[in-house]
Picture 1 (cartoon, rainbow, N blue to C red):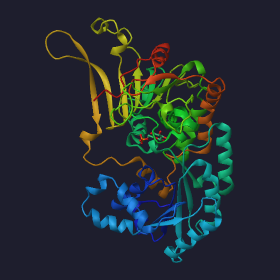
Picture 2 (cartoon, helix red, strand yellow):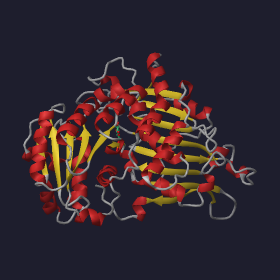
Picture 3 (cartoon, helix red, strand yellow):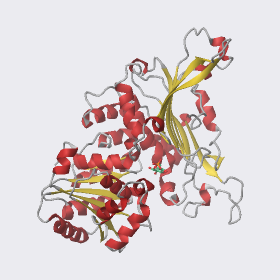
Picture 4 (cartoon, protein in one colour):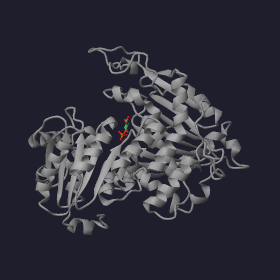
Length: 507
Ligand code: BG6
């Protein structure tokens, strides 16, 4: 059953069970349960909701609840009647221990769920927060032994969706032995960010941007992701995937698809996903000469209890000392269609960089032809071109850099910002990306989830490059922990006449 409106959903007597399959390592992964509790506090979940954590570790309901309490964010603490709400929420949380590949253990879970459902119709949402190697087994068991008998069953899966195009197709094939495409919700949490949703509003409901959105006015576009911490504690996972698979091939490429797609027929999920799939298929597979890879080394400040130095990537005991896995990559993509022909899309992602967590889209426009004010700009005309920045995180913002006369006598020009800082215009908390997507999955709203053909096209862009990097054992350029990344990125940007290096330092 799909709920058509909040009202209808809240009144519904249909029971919803959310089954969180968790790999527990002392904490809950990525605050997923705190998102449930936040939604619960805001009355956004169906009244009859039950949340089951399913994990291999033996754990009582009480222990799980204590773990949830420890993971709650201060967002919730600030609410009125918080304790009351939290008690109500915790009473809805239960734990079941079992193996991910045991149909018997899932049958036991089914029994517990049936007890809660007491014969009412019920929907079941499985959230697989487990290593991908266990997806298929868990889905098989869920389907055979614990799917809903009288409502819908949906499964949220989180990346990595395979390692390359072949393994991704294999995974899709296996999932589809047990589920239909409509039941699979491939989540990419950044698609739930406020600004990513707003990208479509910006593009399709503002006349001023529509005519500009093509090769005629846009010189290049940058998609930037940076973190000021390394792969610490996740070395084992990260070393198998690297930054291209971890960030560029999914997070950044999905946003690029929304940025560059044609106008969809409607806002319906399939119309949007059709356009995304089309534009992804139009991207030329990335060429090695358009790529720079880097890996962070230590910051030179020493390590040990008395120093505050940061280790190199390969100092992680779960990473091999001669690992060639990139922790930084920059790649220029080109879209072979009439709208974007020749426009470089520079994707940049790096860990252990100098700037805090940043995700941005920067759109650089062409020069003003025959600009009367050229001599006021000095020799670097690039500096005077307009730039539109969409900052996804931190502090969501949209701003446009425009040339402006500095007030006063004389004619001095300055690049000023037309700002739309979300924080200053919106008192309300910006919803969390995971929270939004969980709600979408409950509602059956699929537009922000990745369809299998989109996934296939996305792998098509990067699989040949990844194979070449690995077969030729391309050695990443080393950069210091906390620096701005490998120098090679400046050459790559210059090769495509891209002004680069200003990310994260604007209002
Ligand atoms: C994950 C990546 O998908 O996103 C991580 O696997 C990365 O490497 C994380 O750190 C970033 O997400 P957020 O929401 O913390 O910016």
